[in-house]
Image (cartoon, rainbow, N blue to C red; front, side):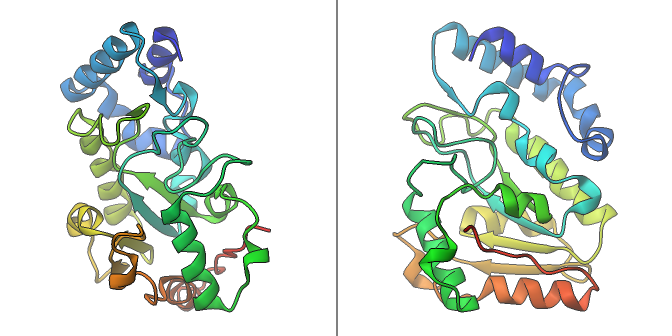
Amino acid sequence: MTVGDCEGAMTETQVQMEPGWKERLIGEFAKPYMQELKAFLRDELAHRKIIYPKGNEYFNAFNSTPFDRVKVVILGQDPYHGPNQAHGLCFSVQQGVEPPPSLINIFKEIQADLGLTPADFRHGNLKSWADQGVLLLNSVLTVEQGRAAAHQGKGWETFTDQAIAELNEKRTGLVFMLWGSYAHKKGEVIDSRKHLVLKAPHPSPLSAHRGFLGCRHFSKANAYLVQQGATPIDWRLP
């Protein structure tokens, strides 16, 4: 990715984002924190740092799941930092890339929860979830190659906090899946009287056995959506 790609991705007039999200978030691009974030990314690229995902995929979660169609929110931390993995949807990897351990544990839980089989999960690209209304949102939208969490504390958290606040305030009957202490803290603003908030440990191999495996979040989410008169999510990835 070039400095020019970054500029285009982050410029208020050029940013590519679904209209419903853009209407609610465009004001953030003029704020000082976003200008500082853009300067940081520009400097990183000028020093030939490799950043994931590509500039045109920074806001992929918002482009894939329009504001008015969000049903479920899954909160991640920051993008995968290996080559060809991140593409702007949390926990998701591009087609043909081996699913990372956390995603494998997510698939295991869905299988146990919904009575599915490994044949229902033939790849790790979660775009079909996003298309159905699952907002796959990382708290931090970029990362340096090989350096997990390298872009934390640079401003992205403020931006994604605002996105969550907009959903919390302007929508009702959503499901928020918060996995791990980081997501739990970020989700403290969510009104559990208006939305279903599901919490569990992170699906990482270090913590999944502490309660993620067996949490049954996927059946609980679908049952709640049906109660709200919404179509449940088809979690399969055949």
